[in-house]
Amino acid sequence: MTEAREAVISPALVRHLIAAGTGNARLASKSFALHLTFGLHDRSRGERAWLRIDEGAITGGAGDADTRFELSGDTDAWQALTQGMPINRLLRQGRVEIRGDARSCIQNWLVVYLLTAGANGFRDQ
Image (cartoon, rainbow, N blue to C red; front, side, top):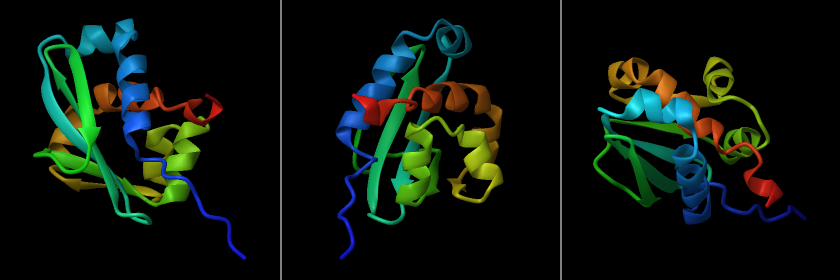
């Protein structure tokens, strides 16, 4: 019998990322004039969420939104992110991919990296 997995891409994760990002001085210094919305997609479960940085203010939600790009991976990849695996390593390994405007993702990579790094420890709560 296989064990049912809990959703990783969830409103709770989005709230956690917003809280972690809001307290990150380095992220604040890199995003004070930024307008960016990007998505997170769990291919295994079909779940989606989005994060928006608008002049340093971070918001987000579950479901679809008008995003420039999304980071898409399976449930195992998102669980690895919450256990401390950096998003750039997941991309290099092919476990997460960029869908949509890759150029926008690359141009804003440091912000994306810093915001997703806030997922580390999410499951420990």
